[in-house]
Length: 493
Image (tube, rainbow, N blue to C red; front, side, top):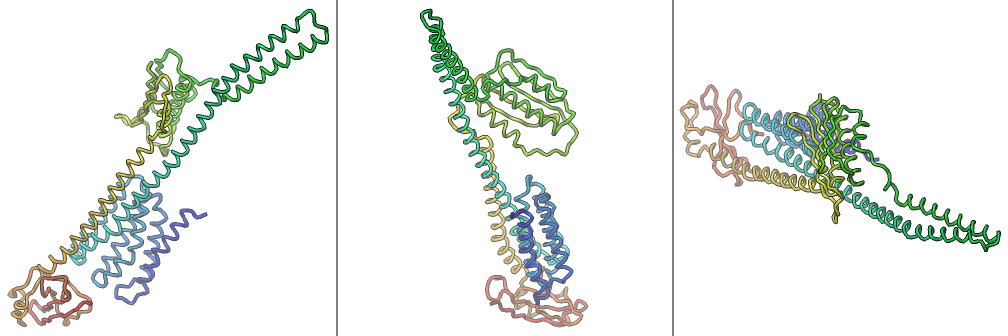
């Protein structure tokens, strides 16, 4: 059977493939063997705990990606950028998919973003590296995480759909059972009456003085047969009516059977309809069971008013390790809605919990299935879809606008014009030269510098999108004096 462990193993193998490939490349930023082993172990840990600790798994993947990229940003940022990219994207999706509360994973993404930008600005590459970190975490972290959350909501809606189908089947069964009970009553009333009448007539015939002994015996046998048929009919009716006549435990009996110290107030003095009584029984029993599981030792009060408003309240209790699925309360909401009442359950101001239900005197007719959980799930998936679209749009807009905008800013603010380049003469002090405030890059790949000199690299023009966009002016200084200058024609494509 293809279980979650095998799924995560396959995903780990897919993510590990690019990590191993990054060690086999001949590029200068290739991974060392020990780094490959370390990253594979970290990814294995992330994939193994993502279903139980999604925030921890996401933090591990984000940390590994940031370290891999920032360490290599000055040698070959491509290796650092893509080596762990699939692993981060997969972990982010799974973290969003398994996170019941998205806040912890959102905090992990925020912390990683802030840490990456700070390290980039202070230690590694400056603002261009910070922009790459922001874009990378947005594309590889935030967007897959948002889609994972949407997938979780969609799966919940599918589950609700199956539960809804099951509810429809139960409704059909209930309708058939009700019809059987109705037919049983009609059969008993009609056929039973006729059998009773026949038994009386045969009994009268048995007493007729003109009958012979043999005829009298035949009449007695006929009367016994008719009486036996009436008894069999009563048995059949009891089977068809199922549990319609079974006694329902009172609210006092439910409270007494719970074993809890409960303060009970029952303001109902008149009889309760059988179906409504069963609903009171079910709500009370389920609420007291939840108290036993989640708030043992807490003070409990149960109040049933004369107009059938039921309240079960418990005070705060020490924290327990019991974790509920929430299906019990959903089931109660459905049960109360089935008979035409309303239901709510929520924490109280003092840290306790309260279950409330208002029930009608008689079950109200219902022409459509209940949609309590379905409506909630549909609202959640609509919210998740809007959030996913918004997050994806914002990330794409930031990248589509921010990256070109930064490229323009970077080129414009670091231009060393041909006139300024020509006026820079060897031996001039750095402070005496008319230089831009910013450099274009720090250490471009494939460019050599004179021994013992510190070089600056500037843009040659303000357009960062034409075929000359990689051209640079190189000025090299030794002891703050200009010792070398070059126009580096670095054509692209």
